[in-house]
Length: 241
Image 1 (spheres, helix red, strand yellow):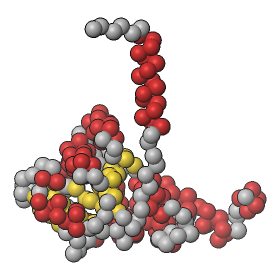
Image 2 (cartoon, one colour):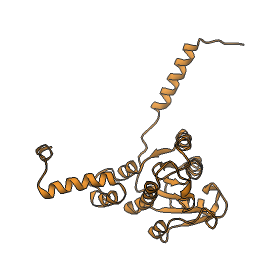
Image 3 (cartoon, helix red, strand yellow):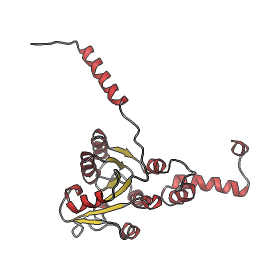
Image 4 (cartoon, helix red, strand yellow):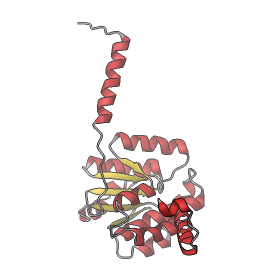
């Protein structure tokens, strides 16, 4: 039996289907009480592969990713891939930040989830929301993110701290992850969603020092306002808004 439908009808049906899928997407919020952070292969040797960020910017971003969970008292699991070879170890700053946290040194597994010790360490956090970042975006971040989604985790990939060879590969990897239900977010959005309210704890007293160290644009905004308040130089419209 053969059915023939005019192309305009088929296109309309496809558009309606895509619209329905988009409308089914919900806003999944990060909960600081149900989140774990994963630092995935942010290794000194692999760092040289990252070309979609300037080196200074990317160094800042991976250190920020490692430092953020300390602000919210969120558990962290660290991992490296074949660190005795050219991949190298994690930066000492990250290791020193998280002394006592699990550090799984994988001998050969490319996908961290293929390592039994790593799976056990992630599961031991007891958290169902995972924020991760790694080098490279299309392998270390994407493979693990997709594996976690298959296990039923809610997964958030920090796009500021995941780097790869070029922008095309980053875009393809992010598209692939999003298609599987991974949420891609930058550091500022991750902070805002975990905090939710500047009056909460952690809130303004804890977050502004973090931004002052890792998010220069917001740091100088806050500094400028602070200077205006201290010097009594607020504009009239600022004082009354």
